[in-house]
Image (tube, rainbow, N blue to C red; front, side, top):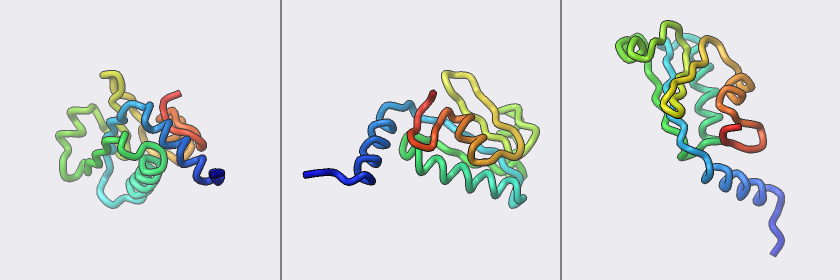
Length: 114
């Protein structure tokens, strides 16, 4: 039986997801500020679409847990901390969809590190 284009893409995405290592992400936000809301929205959409179960995402409000921010050396919100290979990488301040994809090593067509 012939597979449709959409079905083929889903299979390819699942194959990519099964090969990538789990992403350990911590997003530090500042309450309900517009930049924080935007960061949460973009990150949740990308993690669901590209990373699925390969993503461990924690969203931390610095107004509620400033000690976690200090522990990670975060002074600005929003800040995304990606713990990879034991070393954290930081995406600081306002970010859009493309900037986040680039930071995580993702493309529009497939997930995973570059």
